[in-house]
Image 1 (cartoon, rainbow, N blue to C red):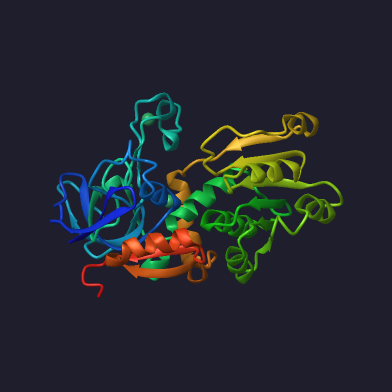
Image 2: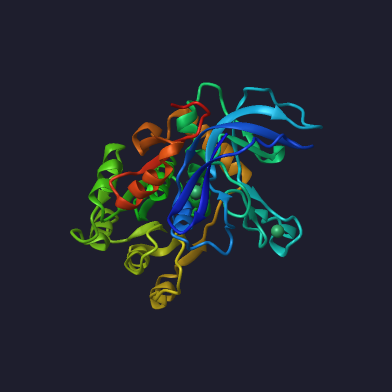
Length: 341
Ligand SMILES: [Zn+2]
Ligand SMILES: [Zn+2]
């Protein structure tokens, strides 16, 4: 079977490996599609070598079908469509003991800390597997994991109908947050400098503005009788994005921090004091978020077709990573099915 192997900075290999038979409590999945995520790009750039070993199979956004079940596994059928929640909490740390195992301090993240989904045969513990509705196309189902991120973020922000929401950053996660928030009845404005990303957002009915051409704070104030936004999501990871997300908020507004900021940022804390703002971190997802994400993708609430820019054969993984860096794409999937060509 084929596997995309990270060999070091900007070096991906396509290797033939033997499928791993499922042990007790495991299932073997024939993977269909695996999405390339921002995290995979960080790995590709060599930024995560301390966590990702040499010859690591990466990838964690996937869909596929059950191919074999190990000893003691019941309730699953061969050929059943599934996805995988790629997080294995330790169950012992302080976060796990307090019921927050999704942000476990010693998390084993499949595709980073252990072999991931960019392989045509993936063997995983059965407790991480979730069933997919048969009518859901498997390419669309590869979006379930990033949609679960958006569902979790929107829950953290407690978005309700009639809220004015501002999403700063219009990559795949930002656009998905905007879509999920809109699905809750909120009015949503997306802030994104890249014209291609704005075009994709507008194409699925999300208003998107260029922060270099539009005074975002003035626009939001204008829309809200001078009040400001109820919730802002910072998904850009940029200092300017943080400033915008703080400045648009209304009294007692909430800032949900989604992006990974690699270093400390300057934040206008006087505004937090003056307007009694709240700051909430939001990371990964819980199983309920995955279940809700499956429901949203299957129902068509997530416009998967418009968000998947390209599907490349696994042999073209290197080119697909390069394309993502070059811009002009939203979500890129690898077709990892055996015999896809
Ligand atoms: Zn991801
Ligand atoms: Zn833990």
